[in-house]
Amino acid sequence: MKIKICGIKSIEEAKAAEELGADMIGFVFHESSKRYIEPKAAREISCQLPYSIQKVGVFVDREENDVIRIAKEALLDVMQFHGSESRDYCAFFKRAFRVIKAFRVGDAGSLEDIKEYPVDMYLLDTLSDKGHGGTGKVFDWSVLKGLTFDQPVILSGGLNPANVRKAIKTIRPFGVDVSTGVEKPEGGKDIELMKLFIENARKGFKDAAR
Image 1 (cartoon, rainbow, N blue to C red):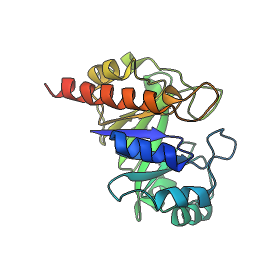
Image 2 (tube, rainbow, N blue to C red):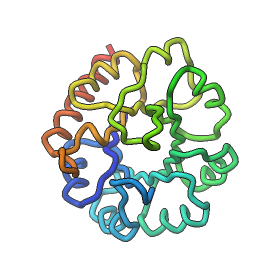
Image 3 (tube, helix red, strand yellow):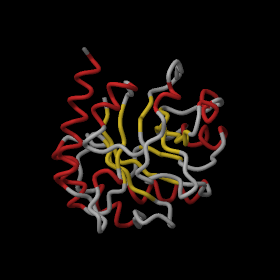
Image 4 (cartoon, rainbow, N blue to C red):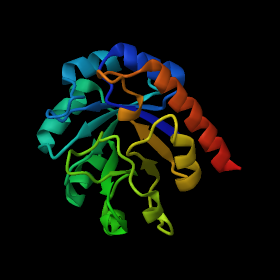
C-alpha cells in the first residue's frame, strides 16, 4: 500500500516525508499552482533521497517535450497527469515511465472512460472549478460503490489525518495522496500533520487487510 505526499518544495519536507515512511513524494510542475517547484530545485531534492522513495512529477496539459525535459532534469520516476491528457498522450510516456492519470470525480459518470487509459495507476481527486487539484475538498466516496478498476487506485481529494483511516476502510484503495491536508495555514508542509497522516494511513491499511 502506498502513501504519497504531494506538493513538496524543500529538502526538509522531502526528508521528513521519507523518514516518516512515505512511499512517494510529488513535485508540482504546474506553474499556476502555489506548490509549483522549479525543475532544478526538484533535482536538488531528488539527489538527496534514496531510490526507495519514488519521485512523482505532477503535470497539467504540458507539451510532451517539456515533460521529458523536466523529468530528466528532476530525476523523476513517475509521471502524474492531472489535466485533459489523452489516452495516446499517456501511452507515449508509458513506454519509459510509470504513469498515473488523475480523474476528477463529480459523479460516477466522471469515470466512464477510465479503463480506456493505458496507465499504471488511477488517481481519483475531487472535481472543482477552482483548480486541477489540491482543493482540500472531499468528493462523495459513495459514487465509487460497485465500480471496478483495471489498475490500482490512489485516493486523493481532501484527505487529512482525521479522515484518512475512514477513507481507506471505505474505499480500500491501493494508495492515498495528500497535499492540503498536511499543510500549515501560511503554506508549506506541517511535519506533525504529515506524521499523523502517515500513522493513520498505515492503521487504515491494516484495518482494510483484516
